Image: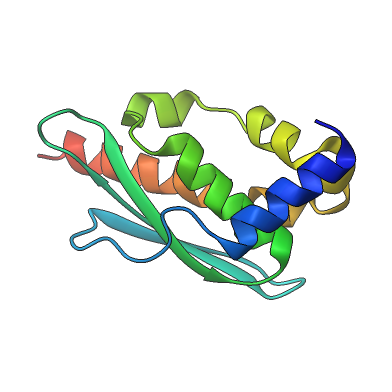
Length: 130
């Protein structure tokens, strides 16, 4: 993708976020924040008992990049297992956002990704204590 295509993708995710809102019964909720610019993202995650895949959603406020990246992360991680989330890297997300934008707005770009990783860790710990 060229720079304009990436900007269009970011704007589409910002204006039409995927998996936005709360889950009916989340297994966990993790809120991440970026104090430098006031961005917040709360990730809700639960594990489907029948398939071990996750269901995730988010709510948040902040800049275009942080909220679009949250939507992108939800789309990327929806239906994965906790193990797959644990093993996931941020590289595909940063590539979608674009190296120049991601470099200039790294904290905004990774806010939701880091919250998803933490939510996955919390659910893994819950499963181990059952």
